[in-house]
Amino acid sequence: MFISLEGIDGSGKSTQARRLAETLRARGREVVLTREPGGSAGAEAVRRLLVEGETDRWSPETELLLFNAARRDHLERTIRPALARGAWVVSDRFADSTRVYQGATRGDLRDLVDRLHALVIGQEPDRTFVIDMDPRAALDRGLARGSGEDRFEGFGLAFQETLRAGFLALAKDFPERIRVIDGAGDADAVAARIEAAL
Image (cartoon, rainbow, N blue to C red):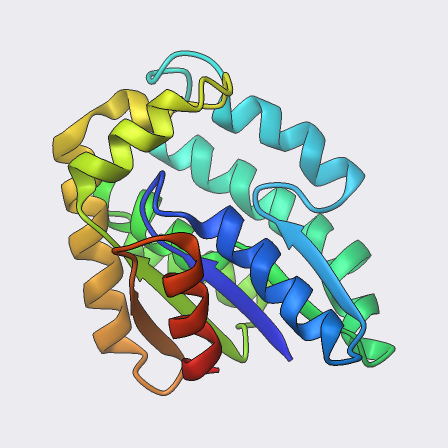
C-alpha cells in the first residue's frame, strides 16, 4: 500500500508517519518512510528552496512547478521502486498538500494543480489520513520546533485556518481514499485512531 499523511503545519504528520511505519514493520512488512517535499536526493535539494526563506520568495505558480518537479523525482526514484518490489510506502505529505496549499490558498490554482498532476504525476495514494487539529495549537507547535523550515508557518494563523478548511473539503471530495483523524490528545491516542482506521 501507498499511504500518505496530510494536515496543517504542526498537526503531527511526521510523528504519526514514523509511528505508522514502525507499527507496520513490527507486523513484518517492508516499509519505506518518506516525505514531501523530499524523499529522494533531487527532491530534497528542491525542498530547501521551498521551505526556507521569506514568505514571498516564490509566486504560487513557481511554487507549484517546484513541488511537481520534486514530486516527480520522488515518485521515480523512491515510491514506484518500493511499490514494485512489494514494500509499503508511508509518506509525510503527497499531492493533496499541493491541492490545498497552492490550489486553494496561494492563488486559487486548483485547476492548474489538477492538470499538472494528471500530466506529470498521475498517481494517488491508496489511503490518505488527514490529521485534523486546532490551527492555533498546530501553529504554536510548528513554530516552537525552530527547524528553520517555517516558511509556510510564517503566513500566520489565518493561512493555517484556510488550510484546515481546505483539507476537510478535500476529504469530502475523495471519501473513498481520505480519512479524517482527530489530532487531539497525545501521540499514542492519535496513532491508535490511525491504526484503527487503516
